[in-house]
Length: 76
Image (cartoon, rainbow, N blue to C red; front, side):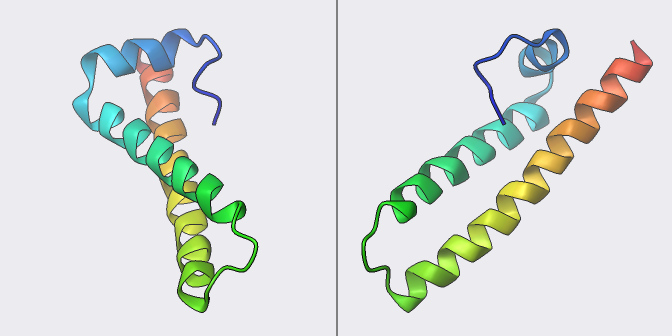
């Protein structure tokens, strides 16, 4: 999810909705950790499991973010 691109709905939700802000923060944290894991030359078994788990969590959070954005856009 590219949080640097301008988006009116996302920007408005970031201002007014703490749950949305938390989800975006979680997504950013997952992305940062996945970036760290992807640079490991020989990840351990635990790190490989962590990477797989984080990818799933990141996708779920992204889906929630886009659902909230869609709901907001429809209602406003």
